[in-house]
Amino acid sequence: MDIEAVRKERQKWLDWKNIRPLRKMLEGLPKREGKLYFPENGAVGIDIEIDDEVVEVAKSLKPWRKGPFQIGNLFIDSEWRSQIKYSIIQPHLNIENQIVGDIGCNNGYYMFRMLEERPKKIVGFDPSPLFRTQFDFIDSFIDSGIEYELLGVEHLQYYGVEFDTLLALGILYHRSDPIASLKSLRQGLKKGGTLILDTFYIEGDEEYCLFPKHRYSKIPNIYFVPTIPALENWIERAKFSNFEVIGKYPTTTQEQRKTDWIDGESLDNFLDPLDSSKTVEGYPAPKRVYIKVTK
View 1 (cartoon, helix red, strand yellow):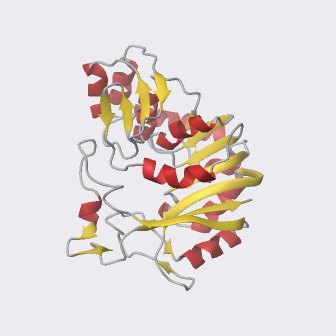
View 2 (cartoon, helix red, strand yellow):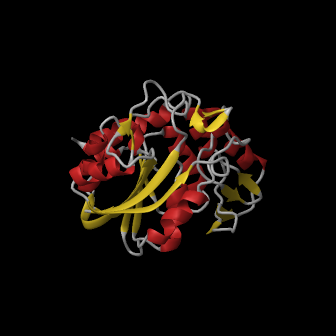
View 3 (spheres, one colour):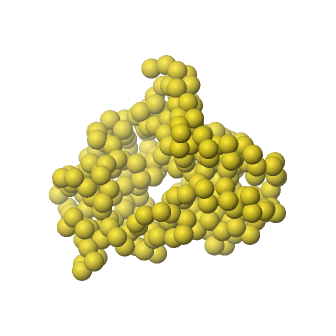
């Protein structure tokens, strides 16, 4: 695969008719320089003075799925309180002076948070031009040095960089071949490198998976929801070692909920209104397992 050709083609995605006006708004903002900080509310904070134009651009970039962000006096209250997930993985990050990749990085919330750990380099992979534009909006205030690629997990083996640590948060269930995706993640790591991953799981001691007929929790592109033993088998087949569960939690409305910064529905709408232990389709309600493995 010619990764330069893929990169060049995907750069054109920023000119899609629904994205180009957002890019022009972003390009029209006056240059401002702020200071990155991390307030106690879990936001990625930028100490800066802003005006109504900045607020208008931020609102134009909805929906904000990951966050929150605090830009001057503007609080972007994202659908996900991503600081909850970060608090689970952060104690397991040993990334000072390391090359780190965030696969499925969305708008970069976790990458901005990881700057505090002083990595050598951070690269984000995500094929969404909207999320890339949200990242560029935030990064325009601080010039973080983070690299953002409109690429996916399938491009890792051709990327030409071996990472010390990879994050793959909330992507595995979107892949129709999870073992192939795990193998791609492994190929992107240095020998001895670390993968931190979270995915939906279902309870059970046996090695099996839920395969939703059409949708799971109203999400159409969910393919496999494994038990933890089945997930461990996937990890073994992908030739990772040192399988470690670092957390497992149900998704709650403390973490995912509708705010003014998204359009449409959120977790409350995805669960059975009479039984919150089930999705609207009748499947077990979402739970996430967080694991750490080694190449």
